[in-house]
Structure formats: C-alpha cells, structure tokens
Amino acid sequence: METSTRVESYKNILMENIIIPKIIYSNDLKNKNYSLSPWLYSSVNIYNKNIKKLSEILDDDLTTKYLGKEISRKSYINNSDYYFLTTRALNEDFFTLDKYSQSEIPMNPKKFKKLNLQKNNIIIAKDAKPGEVVILDKDYPNHMLSGGMYKLPLNNDVLYYFSILKSKFFKDQLNAKVPRGATLKHAGKLFLDCLIPIATESQKKILSHLTQSIILKENMIRTKQELTNQTILDHLMTNSKEPAKCYPRINEIMSENRVDTGIYTHEFKKIESLLKNYKHSYFYLDKKKIQIGSTPKKRIIDENINLKFNWITPDYVSDFGTLIKKIKINCDKANIRKNSVLIINRTSKAGLGQYVGISNFYDFKKYGYARCNQGIYILSDFSDEDLIFIASFLNSKLMRSYCGSVSLGAKMKEMKSFHFSKIPFPNFDAEIKKKIINYYYQKLDYQININDFDLKDDQEFNEKAGILDLQEAIIKIKNIIKDQIYMLTMKKN
Figure 1 (cartoon, helix red, strand yellow):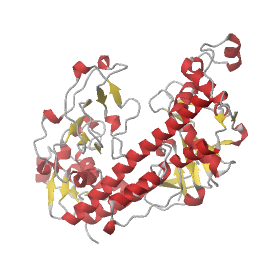
Figure 2 (spheres, rainbow, N blue to C red):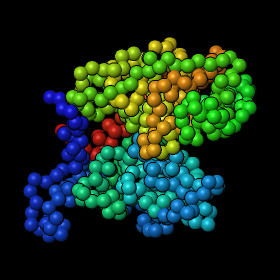
Figure 3 (cartoon, helix red, strand yellow):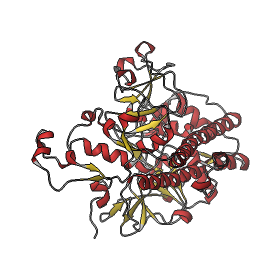
Figure 4 (tube, rainbow, N blue to C red):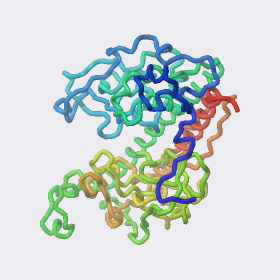
C-alpha cells in the first residue's frame, strides 16, 4: 500500500520499549489526578531486573549548582573568550557537542556561570530537547550551559551510562512520562525517574569501548575537516593573487541584477579572487548536468523496514557532508542511479546561508539506488575522483563563506543551479587534489569484533580513514550498541 504522506512503522508509533495499558483502574486514576492520558500509566518493557532510577546512580542530588543559566541577548557579543552553549549543541545524531552556528555563542564574561565543564561530563537537556544528551570530549572551562541543560554529577562508568542515556530505551521512557500535548518545558526532571540497567563488568566494558570509539571518530571527522580547510586555504593563498578592489562597480551590479550586499563584500571578493586567479586556472559546472531531486507523490518512508531505495533529504546530511541516517523509501523510481554528488540547495539552518551547498558524495556502488527530494541537486557526469573532490571542496570553510554570500532568501536560504554553475572550481595539481580527496573518502571497509576490540587498532583506522569512512564506521558501531542495549534491557521472546 502506498500513500502520499509519511508512514511510520508500528514499532515507532507505540515505542517498543514501553507497554501502554489497555485497562486503567480507578486507584491509578486517583494517583494520576484523574488524567485519561494512557501514556501516564505506561510501564517499561525490561527483563533485566537489576535496574535503578537515574537519580539513584548519580553521585549527588541534581541541584541548581549543576544547572545552566539563561542570559539575555544583550549579553551576546562578537568576540569573547567565554561562550554560552544553547540546547542546539545537543544533537541526537552526535555523541559530542554539535557546535554549529548559534549553538556556541560568544558572551559577556560578567554573565558567566562557572560549571567546571570537564572531559567525560554528561550534559542533558530538560527543556526544548528533553532527555537529549552529549558527552564532553575535552575540558570546556570557558563555556557555560543555558538554563535548559544540566551537567550530571556522575563520575563512575560514565561511558557505559552515557550509552544508555543516548539510547532509544531511555528516550522512550522519558517520552512516555511527558503528557501528550504538553509543552517541552514541562518535562522538568522527569528523566531522573527513568530506569537504567545495571550491567555486568563485561557488558559495561563492551559498551564503554564502543562509545569511546564513536567519540574518537567524531573528533577525527572534525580534524580531517580542519585539515581540508587549511590545505585549501594555504594552497590558494600561496598560488593566487589577492583582490585589487573591494567595492562593486555600477556595471557589475547591473550585470548581476542584485543589490543585496553578500556578493559585494570584501570577504566574498577575496575568495572569488583566490579562485579566479589560481595559477592553474579553474573550471565551471555545466548547469545542464545539475539535476534537481523531487519528492514522489506516492511513497512509504521508514527507517525500520527494508524498503526499495535509500531516501535522502538535507536533514540527513551532516555539516561534514556525511549521511547520518539511513532511511528507506518505496516509490515509483530512484533518481540517484550512479555515483553522484548530492548538493543541498536550500536550508533554514542558522539563517545565514553558510549551510547551503554542503555536499555528499553518494557511493552508488556501495549503497545502491536512492531517491532525494527537491532540497538537493544531483551531479553525476564526472569521474569518481572529480566527484569526491567537488564534494569535499564545497564542504570547506572557504566555500561555506562563499555560498553564504551567494545564497538568497530570508528565512529559507537558497542557491539555484545557475549559482552553482558560476562557482570557479580550481584545477588543483594532482598532489593537492589527492590530499583533499583522501581527507574526505578512501573507500575503506570498517571491520569490528566486539569480543576482541582494541581501541589502539581502532585509532589506527581513524588515522587512515576519510570523513565518509569514519561516518560509515560510526553508523555500524551505533547499530551494535543498539543491539547490545536491546539484549540488556528488552524482554526475551
């Protein structure tokens, strides 16, 4: 059966970790202030009887000394050594902080609340994203949390407990405790009543090692992206001329037919000059080769059922040009039928346009047929080497600034195909081009044996791997963690 709306799996709707009662007794009604919401009478589906509430495993009561503090927008400043973290930094797809625009804000030091944020501290949201957690990958002495987040006072078996807190098992419990239709701010400290399985030392070790592996890979992705950024900038600065002028001429404004300031700023002119004055010249994309995706009218979309094609939207592409979710779709036909670059052409993220143009190299040989929606352009008719280079180059910090300046729109920033066809891609020499490609993708196959897991060997893979290889490994590890937690918590058949 096909439908024109998204179809969620039966498991997802009912939350497989929660039992919803068919009968509610009068005494239960009285205890719940006569609420008729079945969610409030639910119970946890768990066979491991060695369990505790989250509040029971914390090393201290969760008082306001562990709570962040709200500050007014007047306390936001352009440059500071102190930073305000919003709940946007807590992303369900990442174990560590997602510090994109508007989640890490320079702030007035006088408004700073010292929380002594240290490596392996777990941060949990009580508002906006209740129950969402991240673990700190290093010390953050000059960062403070917003009033919607707590630092959990937990010092033992932190990696193990974090894997549970990040799991669907934990989030299903909290979702069941929040009354349907309530605003998120009413979640409060309900997460303290969620149950945590107490595992054996062997089980803790496996989950701790797997969790640490993901943390290291997320950090390596950031490292490889920074190496890409620096390689591109250094090479262009060394082999290109600086711009001679900073301001637009009237004939330029007339030819562009635009009066917004983005493409006339000194920053944009400098980048454009570096590209157009590169000593080995540059090339453009053929507009005719840039195809737009589309959402099929009849479709079934699900992440738990093995449907015909992979389904890709801008929401499933990370800031590093990786696919962070594997969603499937049944529809009439695929529009990705070969190795391609998938380019985000519009997004409301951050509102400044710097996320327009983020690209993913889709390895068709590895992942098969796929369908993408109209928020993505498809570029296919190049060699694999050129496709990987184009994707990596578009993801660089330099091009994020370039695309941000070119993009149009108020709330939803957008670039049309002709905008992408006017980008001058430098003809980098083979050595530099290969380095940029390797930072992004090396087509490595990640193998893991949880019974003989060695973090040292794992780190050797991280050093060799590209950004796409690392993300693919993260997805594999997350699936293993999911299976381990399922075996640790769910009822046996």
